[in-house]
Length: 304
Image (tube, rainbow, N blue to C red):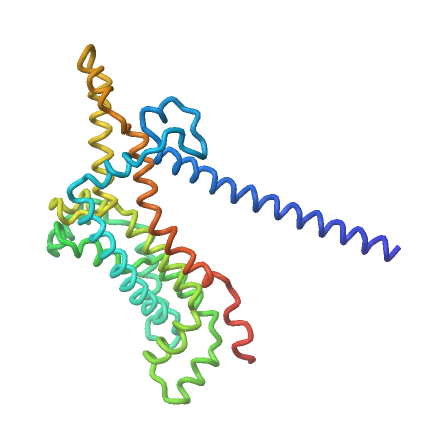
């Protein structure tokens, strides 16, 4: 009877393992296959891709879609703006948010509960788009490169995530550091941050992706074309391409035929090339941060 129970348990465990692997493979395919399809369409002639039948490999290979994207006069400048705001904005946001989260988790700080409530309250209500624009204008941030960095320095959601993670750090580590004469700032940089690599990496990635993909700020708060980030430049380019396609569809006769003969890049192929350009930097950076997402870094660090 005992052997039968063990055999059934082993068989059930093997079945669950196979089921887990199957679900993970299906999940990976649901991510990889659409990405391959987008890549194939971005490397295919637009007019040929419009006929359909392209899945994971281009039928008529071309780089014209990417050449059309980089033909924009301010595309390189947009890259520089995006890199600047992503690197500086992510660094400052993570450091300042981590400092605020560390302060809010301290039970000895006067008014800690009240301050936490007021910080959390900002997640529930917003002043609205127009008051927000007025505040940015009064602070002279509109039409400035700092509009990408300063308003995004703090995220209450990220702050709460960091605070929850910091609360899991054994208090004995901080107490031992204080006995050795370490200040609160020293504890933060020497104890808290080194032992919080998983949450720091996750928040850094979230911030970086948010900065890199944000087109709204550049489109609504910046008028100077030379200060618009890559996402805004590409979004405006797609809008112009769509307007051109609508004009072409509304035209008739010989004019339409002449335009069709000259067009090799369509709105869809241009959109696919734009997607590849936007996601490529994040795809390159992600493997270097992936190892820090593993939990359990604190296991065995200290025994109470």
